[in-house]
Length: 382
Ligand SMILES: Cc1ncc(COP(=O)(O)O)c(C=O)c1O
Image (cartoon, rainbow, N blue to C red; front, side, top):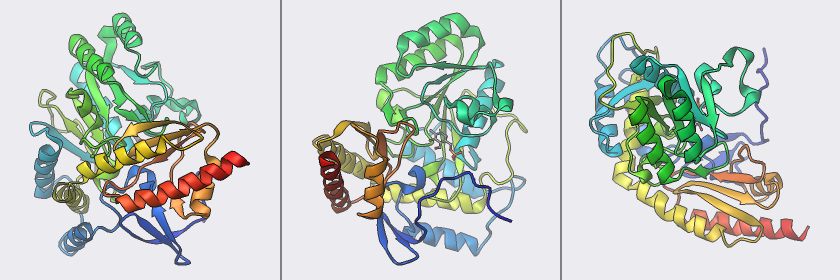
């Protein structure tokens, strides 16, 4: 048997990791500013994380949602506290797509409606509804196609008002990334998110904040939607939640009521996943990583803006998009192969992404900045 070949791979095989560093099988050390698609939030193999998971593994690793798993209550309590949404309810699943799938479904159960407003350049995952709400025809199979999704331009308040005027009574939910990730790091304006809140209230639609990439402290606030001072009805999350252990979830406002059998999953909220997520939140609290993300993120954004050949730097905290005046592939290749630094791409060929661990250190940021400046100056004289 061989692997189903769907991933274009870079020719590096990490076999060890610690903090913001990876080592390949030849012992070569890399600075990881990508965190495997924004997943590594508290750093690779953080000692507290390893201890918590190891201890749990020696007790009980898994049982399904058929028995009491009080670690889920511990997680809900701590997540409520760290995210500032103490009165919200938690449903646990296994990935970002699954979180969005459940969010969209819950919204429709709640208001009995079918249509969803989603945005151009948005990405919400690859399962049926999540992919239908994703603005990329190449990954939507014929079976996923539906007339229930209305795509609008991001940050366009007028288009949003028009769509509600036209379809208001049919709109079940609006799904929106506070900062678009895969699309190239575009930040929602505060007034746009406020407008979504107002229109959802007016038309009994559910505001779904896709916080899978921009949430969990990455922007410097727990949810990047918090910058707008609005509460979403549902926050979907995954990536940074388990620092690499697969876990996702939705945080649900109190007015959305549960019913037995309404949502479910076999693996969601298992013992190991819960301790992984608890360890992440404990470290976030203890080591003030959101403050660090703001501090290092502001520093990086400020310095990157000064580099010749950089057209625009977008983002907040440690969710940074660097748009170059030319395609970024050669720059990223030189960073990884000549300077041993991992960065990310985006669906915009000129924009590279930085999605490092939230506890990235200043000297690590400086190491990257020096390498980036050197690569950029070489590219510009070519
Ligand atoms: C904003 C956003 N939503 C959802 C997803 C899907 O998450 P997963 O790959 O865990 O299904 C992603 C993944 O990149 C994402 O960036």
